[in-house]
Image 1 (cartoon, rainbow, N blue to C red):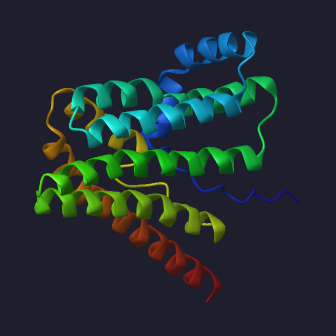
Image 2: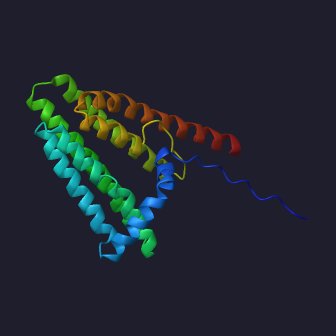
Length: 211
């Protein structure tokens, strides 16, 4: 007697996941070229981190254009290091861990640069909003990581990492970091709450299935 296979849950792709698919035709040839010239995925991760740190320094000095240019160039290294590792057959859990940690450091460097700038210019409101944006960004990532540790999916929300990059970078280039900070401060924390709510729903679903 045949039995029907257990249906697998449909995991909705995030905007970041879709961007990786849409730009696969660009990232894969670029990753192949970088592998060919001898760069490694870890070196790309480090270069991205250093580049964002330099961008953060420019932001701390009030040079939003140069900061935005460094962030524009270096943040996409995150897509390249993972693609390079996959093409080399060197994808490891530790590599993914280091990549994720370096991403969090990059975000904190960037927002820390803005905190320094606003605090030294006695702009208390934007200093606190930038802190709120940093806290929200970390909580978006932390809530997903904790959910995955519990074998739950929290890959949802309106402002995941790619959206944050697409909000912050153009507004830095346009010298409107204040507008970027308002958006990030509000919607990163909304995204974290969305993920908490989704995990709560999954817990309730599991409880109903075992009842």
